[in-house]
Image (tube, rainbow, N blue to C red; front, side, top):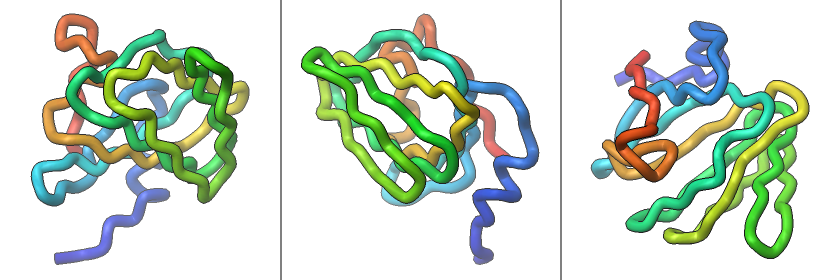
Length: 116
């Protein structure tokens, strides 16, 4: 039972768009990820998508516009809504989602999440 230091966990990897699991609660994964550039348009048919910016700036393109998040801000994309995260500068995020949720919404194209 020790606190999780997100900055220390983020220092352990450099890959972009590769979520790393740092903890769990109630069947959900707590993950950190570094992002830069554009991710693919996708949706999650069975779950909302939670984003919290730790550093940098994240844009989330939605069908009707773009949401911009700065450090300390949170946004939840409703389940089933198409979206595309993107960042112009390296941005660090905290993600929370049900364990096993594919990051692209499709298990065939999702990255394998790593526990750190």
